[in-house]
Structure formats: structure tokens, C-alpha cells
Image (tube, rainbow, N blue to C red):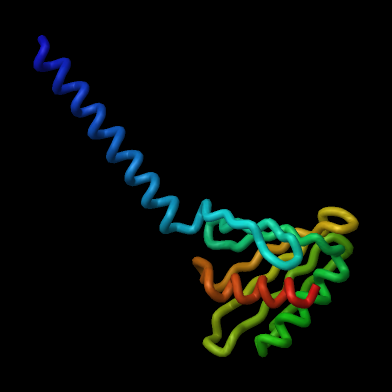
Length: 138
């Protein structure tokens, strides 16, 4: 009886440790929960399923102007823009023909949500570059 209890405890401990290591590896490599405080405009930034989500401390109109200016300054080809009073979606392509989707949503008078997606799965380096450029325009 003692050996069965010991074996069960050992298996449980190994399974728990393996599960914890696997979860840590998935979370650190997938970019799903990489959270950082943004610089410059006081934005909060998070990576969620390949998207870079940021909350900007700027009004909707100012954020849309800054985003359009950043797209132009980075020499991206603007493919389309859909806009209403509450949100704006800009689709652009870079020189490597990667699709860049920028979703801007009004949260309040001085708060805007920005979502950046590059390609199908996201590209952190390009997404951070775009966010940095947008923040510099604010």
C-alpha cells in the first residue's frame, strides 16, 4: 500500500510540474500574455493572440490622424480605410507585402483603443515599430 501511495504522489508531482512548465513555455513564446507598459503617450500595451493592443491617452480624431500619419511616414501603401463615428479600420501593406491592420476604437473623450495586426499571426517587431511611430505623432 505504501508503494502505491508513493508512486501516485510522485506521478502527481511530475504531472503538475510538467503542466506548469508547458504552460509557462506556451505563455512566454506565444505572445498571448506578454504585457508591458507603453512609453511616450502613456499607453497600456498587451499582446493578445498575435495582436498588439494598446490604449492611447488621446481622443479618437487625434489618434486617427496620428495613425494615418504613421502609415504615411513608414511608407506603407494604404489599401483601404473604413470609418464611422466610433471606429476606424485602416488596411496597409509594407514593402514586403505584409498586411497591416490597424483598428482604432473610441473609448472616451481622451482614450482610444488601438489594435495592430501584421500578417496572419502577428509580427511583434513591426507592430511595436508602428505603435512607436503612432505615439510619436500624438
